[in-house]
Structure formats: C-alpha cells, structure tokens
Image 1: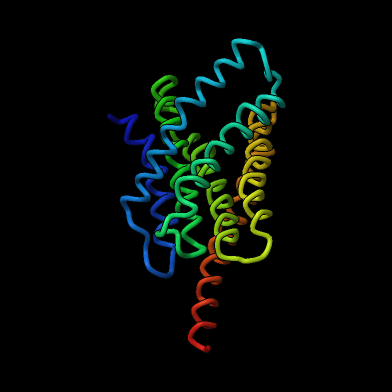
Image 2: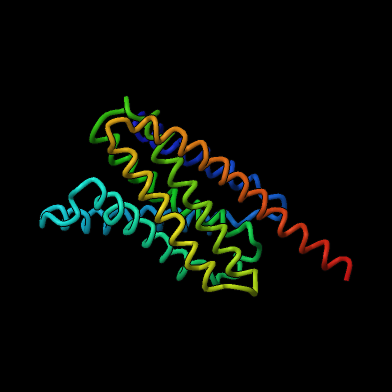
Length: 221
C-alpha cells in the first residue's frame, strides 16, 4: 500500500497544479480521469513492443533505445490517443484544455510505469522517480497539449502545430532518455529539468493569456 501511495502521489500533485492553473471554467473531471486511464493502458502494448525489440536485439545501444524505444514509441502513442480521442471532443473548447488533457494522458502512462518500477525495485527510488521520470512525462504532456491547443484554435498552420505536438515531446523525451543513461547524467538531467519546468510554466501562462485575449476581443466587438 505504501508503494502504491508514493507511486501515485506525484501524478496527483502535478495534475492538481495543472488543473487549478486554468483561469477559466474547469474541465470535467470524468473526462480527465478517462484520459488518465487511457494513458495508463498504453503501458501494456508499449512494454510488449519494447520487449519484442529487445528480444530480437534491435535498437539496443543507449542512443537508439532512447530515441526509438522511449521517445518515439511512447510519445507517438500518447499523441495518437490525444489526436483520436480528445482533439475533436466538445469539452476541448479552450487553448488551455489541450494542456490539461495532454498532461492527463502523459501522467496516466507515467503513473502505471512508476507503480511497476517501484514494485520491482523498491520504494527507495520513489523520490527520484517523482522528480525525474514522472514530472518529465507531465511536462512533455504540457508541450504536446499546448501545440494541440494551437492547432485547434488557431486558423494558421494547423498541420504544423499538430506535427509539433508530437515532434517536440519526442525530441525532448529522446534527449532526456539519453542523458539518464550517461555516466554523468546528473550534470545533464538537472539543468534539463529546470529548463523544461520553466518552458512548461511559460506555456501554461501563454495558453491562459490566449483565452483572456480572445474573450476581451469578443467583448469589444
């Protein structure tokens, strides 16, 4: 029970921060929870695919594992769920909503992955997992959702924004994965995470301002 609690707690904390950072009407919790569960369910097919590649000896160098088995596969599946399960949903009606649903999908994945890891390796890794893997997944979700929001509510460059919603988290996830497996990973991962948090918070503020400016424009017309 203790392992389960510490495995879930970081996701709850990050999701609460993202949810309450929205300055306008809040999103329906059942839909957020559904996206969280869908994100968690992605763990099983991805574990199977990753195991199959490992068994066949494909993509086994640190760089290739980071790019293909972590960054590409995980971010593509999360992007796919977002694109086909939530992008056209009627509740996705503000730019900031993309961030909420992107984070929900990403944290669902990160939480189940975290539970499995802590049960296999022990509760002593809980703090490390909360600070790095879980929060990084959440921040990748912020960026994915931000560009999905731009794609839905900006008439210009929709396809480009949809592409960036996948490509930016994919590249950042690949960098993060490769940094983690280097011998001096702390020298790279800590500044990487600080910058990622700064960028994530900035995107949150920009998405909030986007809606405020839109409402101001509507009132003035």
